[in-house]
Image (cartoon, rainbow, N blue to C red; front, side, top):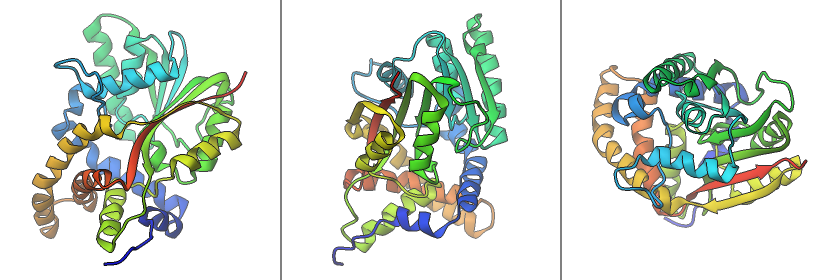
Length: 305
């Protein structure tokens, strides 16, 4: 079918307004958080991101293992003030507050997610008989322009939320402003790699991004340039695609089950386009990752003192 040098995510970004992209993200999470809770066990571990399998202990939780790995990279410490920028239902903020003793603030566009996160934090604090999880607070706020004073945080935490940023260069610069001198920005997310080699690959890549309300993926080189331009120094940059691949494969199996079911329900008007799109994304995220169209990377940047 020829060599179709296209990047569908970039095309989606240029075609949609900032307001519409934010509306897409809000609609997606409003519609699909229930799926995460019901089918991906988020109701008990509270994490809405890929797991990390490197050196995972037998019987360990790969999503919590991801948080521990990233926290080591970012050197999150007791008493640190941490902004979980795009917190979902609070998994990282609750875990880090409980395990490390940082003071975490999680923000999300979706009121129902913030409400769930507050409930999970309260339950975790009660179950552990300590105050650790009470150090995690949650609010509805746009992570493009957080309602905090410059220099408010020691760590900005963006795990699979950076991909939703409308203008990624501007977002990195705004996070630089949010940090105190010596503060760290941690990003774990997908990054554009090879261009699709065919129209079919381009279609699969577009379905993966659109299904998860991602306007586009930037490349690793672009992120590093944005960091340098903002004033950051890079502490860590690593392709961890192989470490998330087992989890990506597990998510892929949900797509095999749910695409025909959701397609039929959508034809009957019994499910939302966001739920159907989520099913397609769970399928195509693995196929496109395996084909090298994108990579999953972990980055940490520091604001110089």
